[in-house]
Length: 398
Ligand code: DOR
Ligand code: ZN
Ligand code: ZN
Image (cartoon, rainbow, N blue to C red; front, side):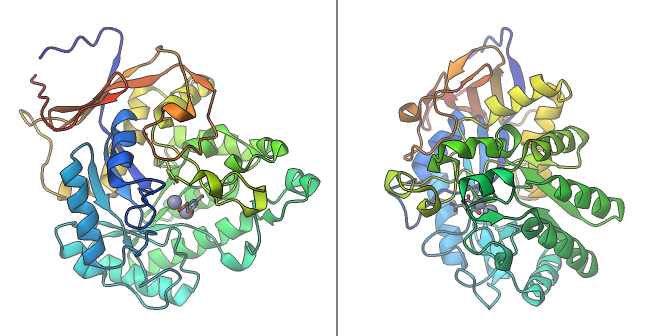
């Protein structure tokens, strides 16, 4: 089949290092199938499914299951992320080696939604990860500084009477784990960087030769804490929306390569967990179906992020961080490719009830954007086209 690309931008398939698919455990909010559809429609050909499921993905039984289910669905490569500890907030390291060796071939481990606060435990986790050649994705929250916190600690939270989440809760862990990774000869990846101070610490650590990488979410690139004034719980997220000065620093860091990539932290939640008081709502926002539109808007607004850069931050760097090229199937000349075709000027409005996700918690509802992925190709096969997913069967040939 010949695809007319007329006026569109052809990019390598997007890779999301940070997706919550909620299966097993909360299939009412997302499944591997519904999340895969959302990913394909968003231009993704690979997603990394976070470990804070129920049961927690802390053993090869769970990670291999997630991998196999993703293959069955066939819309996107679902790479399971393994938990660093056994259970949520566990005190024992998980059998990372078993997860890395299983069919799910776990290459990324994380404490996201799990939260390893003990520095000695994190040090041992980093040493273990270095021996396996895997990376630890650090949620970066010092829980003793975030007790009861629901919003960024600043004038806006103070005005609204919301308990604040200080920047230091993030930055203390970024600094700590940069040093622990250096000493362990390990790689550490900072999840959802949200403050200007984190950017400075990343510059410092990278300058010292520490093997540290970082991601930023679309929502932290677009929204700030002025959103809180509505008290709409859709804006509650961890880490919280920060101040406009942080947003500017995050944008600059993404353009400069100090922040390596964009990751969605796609976090589906049921209506009843979001349609309540701000402080009682679960933290998290949908991300997969709106990420490219937001990154493209940031590109226009900064004038400093080219389509070439977007390929880097949405696809190449995340694939390198996860060492996807080690996972078999190197993409070479004559190989079927992972591709995303983007219409930079389509013009569209996000409608929460039209999303493929099972959940509706998008802070971008009714906002209009210009760019949208219009075709996604996974290993030579169309997985999404013009807003409709295609299960296995349709073939594209070059
Ligand atoms: O907002 C968030 N939601 N941040 C996290 O770290 C976890 C996530 C979730 O699982 O809902
Ligand atoms: Zn997190
Ligand atoms: Zn997360």
